[in-house]
Length: 396
Image (cartoon, rainbow, N blue to C red; front, side, top):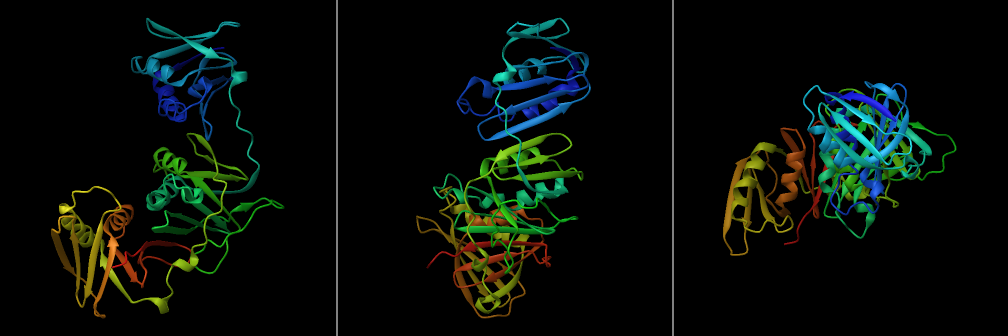
């Protein structure tokens, strides 16, 4: 196995693909999981890293001096070694037949890295595709970022520890919840989801309305967070391929495979209050609400997300928020709103509201208040394209 490649061409893809192999110490149960597969073909280099849950793959085309072959070396050591090369310098890789070491050299420097035979590298099975769709990379990233904050974390109810992805025709429905709040996003695709005929899948009631999805899966929390970091703001289309047990995201730069959560997402349509159940509805300026929360939160010395109960008061023309800490100290702030209904008082976790305001780009949110919940909706909602956040109220 032999090839040469410029540092500027090689290091960024290596850094990208090494994500599964360079996690926290002890995260990978076997040495091979810390390695990167170097699969040298005649016209390109294929690099793969895996752990027990995910697989990352990238392809580098600008290689020369090729002798085809495959081997694996420690991803972190290889990355650290290549980073020391000068900008624009050519890095040479060579492993002679029968030699357990790979020689990596650039300029006058060289290192030898112990390899593990490529035959021992874990091979993720081909996805048994049941559905696929294309979507702009930037849109998919923005959708993930707008709802991922309300995922559960290490909950015994495994279906809470991830993001539900539902598909129906040309519509996607994505939702996350930790049982205290719920985030839901629907959007229309340019082309309908391609469903494999005769695929054995379950449909699910995951539409905030009365509809059903043709298919729904749950992407694990850690994979959702990794995708948020890996995806870019490119307008290029990416392909999402859904299998029975895993999902694959293919971008121009990389492909990412992760296992799905083996659970069914809870039915949540009925959680959103009907119009007849609403106590009031008002348009709230996001900047003013965000500022008010920041001002009352200054007396909260407990940084726990759950210890952030705020009392809110709606009166004609005015929204007031008050927080009382465990020393009985209080802080208040208020701002004007276009509200002319009855006086209303409710208690809510202000941290949850802050996360909603921080994840959306709207200037206003439509607040729909019911007896047990508050729903924040984008005023730009229209059929097939909706953004909704539900937060359970705290009992007085």
